[in-house]
Length: 304
Image 1 (cartoon, rainbow, N blue to C red):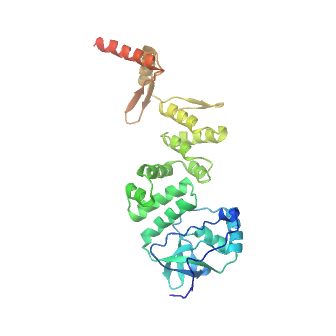
Image 2: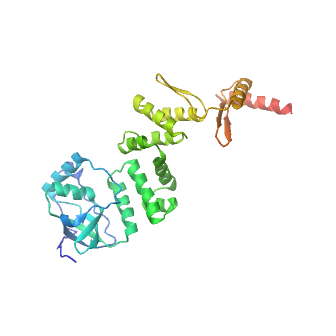
C-alpha cells in the first residue's frame, strides 16, 4: 500500500465565523469500517460512478473552495481503496471537487474496506443527510439500490432510514414524463405537485397539466383538484385553455351519469377504465344533504 501522511482525528480547527460554518460541517463522517485516516494525493482519487448526486452548483463549489484555501479541508472525505494507488469516493465528492479548485494536491480521507454493493448505500445515506439531493437523484439512487443489491423496497427503506411508503413515492417519480422529471431535478416542481400528476393515468394529460402548473404557478391543492376532475372524465378549464379528459365515458355510462345526477340532485362523478372497471362518487354538502340522499336510497330500496 502506498504510504500516506497520517492525520490526527482529534486535532482541533479554529473557527472563522458563522459564514464558514454554513459551508463546512465540522461533524465527522461515521468511521465505522475505516482502518485509518490518511492524506491521499488528489490524483489518486476518482469519483464514484454510482454517486447519486449528478449536478454540483458551481458557485457553491467556489465558495467552499475559498473556505478550504483559508482552513484546509476540515472534514475528511471517505474513500475505499481500489488498488495500491487508486481510491474511489464513498462520501465527499463535493469536498473533493472544491479541494481541486482550491489547488490542493492531497486531502485527508478515511479509508474504508467495504463490499461493492455497500458503496451506493453509504454514498446515498451520506448525501441525503448532507447534500440535499433533489427528488429525482434520490429516486434513481433507490432504484439503483434495488437493482444492484436485489433489495426489496422494505429493505431499501430500512437501510436508508425511511418509511417504505416514502421510498415507494420516490420510485414512482421515475414513471413521470421526462420533462416533468427534469423540472423536479431542477427543483422547479415539488413533490406535492408530482404526486398529484401521478394520479393522472395518461402521460399526455400529465404533460398538459404540468405546463399549466408552470404557466399559472398552481398550488398543490389546485393540481389535485384538476387531476381528480380528469380522473372523473371531466374536461377542465385552465386559464383560457381547455384540457379534454382522455378517458371520456362511453355514451351509455355518460347517460347513466346524467340520470343519476338528475335523480339525486347531486353532481355525480363517474370514472371508467379500459378494463371495464369504474367508480361512482356522490358528493354531499353537509349532514342534512347526506340525510336527503340516504332518504332517496331508502325510497328506491322500498320499491324493490
